[in-house]
Image 1 (cartoon, one colour):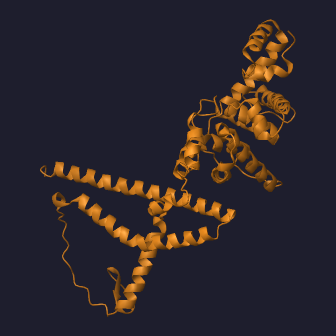
Image 2 (image 1 turned 30 degrees about the vertical axis):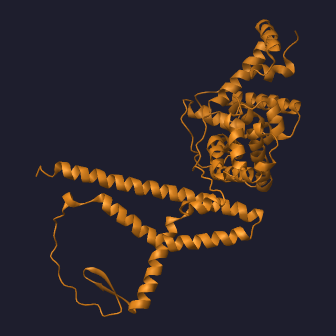
Image 3 (image 1 turned 135 degrees about the vertical axis):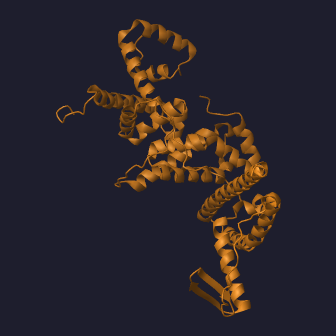
Length: 186
Length: 217
């Protein structure tokens, strides 16, 4: 996936030249990917929506500080990343019950979907973030490194660790199909 | 060539430079160990890709600060407040002008009067005849719109001065709050306008049906 859409730079220039309504074009272009990234990190639809709004507000207020206008989306992901991590710190120790997320259509059987969601949800935040940005958002490793503020080698090891962990969790989940696992099988 | 090792992720996600990718493909075709690792990696990736995107609970509408806001002040008008506000203001004015408000409960429901005793209600013959042919929905729509405009103007002015006051106390926290409120108001306004349009279109459609069936009875 090519992260940079041709129009981002032009829209940013319009906004910075005073046509502030044009910022909506950036919002409409990026709200769904950014919301999905935040939702997959946070796991709660309403909180994800709040953080998504905050991300765009912050982006608008700080748009003038964006040095490379061709790198708008990694910068936007970076803002969302910072807000997610600040929410993680705030929520430390709390437990949440997830309420029916508004999921789009899928042909995946529900038990498989739940198993994958569970495996993803059990990853540490930094590993989960690499998986989400790589698999769902198609960011390149150097772009993920910029979002996480970490070296590319660290990003790659996080991905290996995440995939290894998912492999063992999913292998265990799908090993005994057709009946619930007994406690001795777990 | 040695095993893929730390180039596995770049291989699977096709981020290796093209020459290196060709060499790596050749190696994987011959190496069972690397084939196994690539296959495991692909399976996990494939499972993850099956998870669908989620939809936003609501769309965002960004309403920037003036001057564009000043050019279109209705964009952040909230209908939810306009009606109760207008009703309350109307009642206050009516009480001031006409005297105390009286209410009576009778067989036919509640009756309300201002400034005078409630007169005995006369029985009014009920008519079921409605002149559908001469209903002009366009005129009714225009009248409703102008009445509504009058009702909301006062409310709008109040919003304007409130926002202006907040903008004056201009720190980052306030700016974020103002933007959030404006965004909510704009969404609400869009929703209201869409409903208004739907109701009008339904009225027009109904009028069409009535006209088409008027000769059938």
